Length: 170
Picture 1 (cartoon, rainbow, N blue to C red):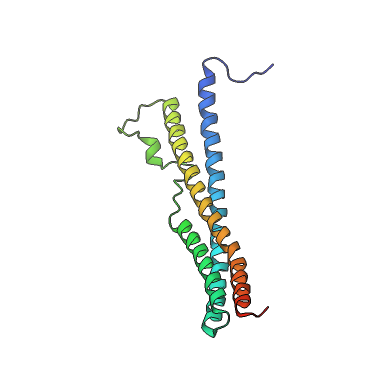
Picture 2: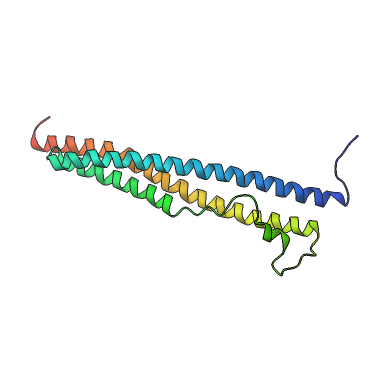
């Protein structure tokens, strides 16, 4: 029965698998980053459209206070989207520059295959951890943007009805 690598071969097999899985993880993180950037861009587009419409309502004098309140929330949401896009800091993707594989930090070319793979795995681990943090911050900014965007119409309507009630018009 085939049992795969054992004994002295097992650490080398594990190292190759660690590098392979790190490359898979980094690929998944790159896809997640692209999806988040797409969502942020789409939300930004909707917020800008809403701001233009509400700006027209303010300029026409139609329900100025509710429009300003709703626009302020949309502006905050747009700001969150812009902040997420501008400050995104995804470390990288799988793969190393050829020079990095040809020479180690000291310019040595005598490292074993195992040592080179271990160095690659350690570098990937640092990149994965950094990407996890960056994706988390990006998600938080988008969550804030969606929250503000969702509040905008509700707060605008509340202001409209409050204004009507205060004026005695139901």
